[in-house]
Image (cartoon, rainbow, N blue to C red; front, side, top):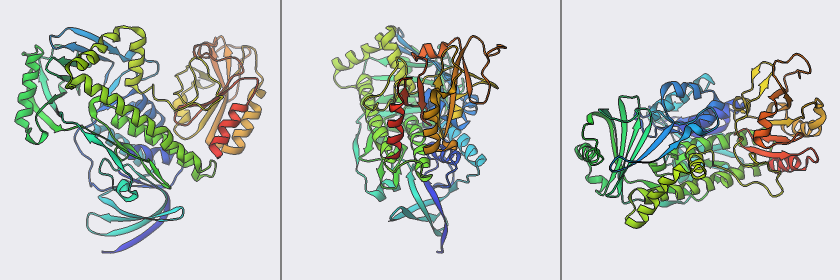
Length: 540
């Protein structure tokens, strides 16, 4: 065996699934020198985690890959809930969401990986497949990583930071000795990606039947001809074979009155006991965990992969700011502080769903299932689709924060329709998981850009022009009006002030949006103190 030392890099990403590739692309867009390795020589051709939430699609939009995902998948805008006898209980209608992605996208994880792999290649990143991490030697701020190729050759690479996105059996997590606490459920999940004909319901929507025996049947579209069927059984997964799975799905389809449905040949069959585990810390000095390496989620909520992708978007811009000496090391602590509670909350949500689906206490199960009827109530429906979309994910707002009715620091920045001199303004692409955007909302006749002059100087001095963009948003009756039209690349038009009014903003308000699309701070016209506080937290 020959050991070769390679030039030092800034970040080594371990694991080239969707989570690791998302991080690699976001880091590359931040001009971070990286390498990404994966112990497997090829990614899995199986569909596996195939639901992408609207929030994940917004993250992909920042990286420029959302459009290709949409072309390759099926968008399910509605989730229909039925009793065992086929009566509609309630409907979760994600088409009511604001934003460009009002639905859950069904896309094979293999396709998602391929799209991100090509995006990485376009950024000059070559995924080093068949190369495994063996060990990490920490020396101050440096991490000397030992690698092993499939042919037995060894090499080393020194990196400032290492990120483990290497799945539930993470080698990085083992190396840092993080506790990984959790449990495996008794119930066995069965899944089949299978041809199906004669299904009487809309083939692009998702359908969930709640069986009286304490299980369920979920039907997810793959391409209009292929569907994913999901159910549970109380047989140990080790005793469940392919014949059992197909027989069980035939029984369940019959139980919900779908005897006419004909199952074809399965493309993929899986059976497993769901596990929920979480690492006690997502950071150990310069080593980080993301995705399944940090938290393994039950698939019942279909949010595990999405949460991992959003881990990467949260971490990428923070690493970049620290590497460029534009932020203090304490910013990296906020990765665990923000993402750990998100994973914990998702655990609790998944546990509730598990009790609703197959809880052994029949009365508690009935009570939880009855909540589906509340989807007919506007407030409950709005809250539920916010959870499904992951728009409800938020981080604590600092004490003393300025808040508005629709904009709160620590929460996702809502979509707002603004126009620039060259056409529609794409905020997500402007953020790109790489820069802050500062927007100052001027009044109807105010063209004085000194409104944010002091703030902009502070951001320019401390973040640099490449790490933030500033815009003044003008209230005008028309983007194309001839007179009194703001000019310049940093002028935006809010037609008739509709966006400002919808968001509950006041003339003179300044909004800072983090690179990941969350609101960092809001200041009103009377004081810029909250902006000072936000910058100070970045640089602690």
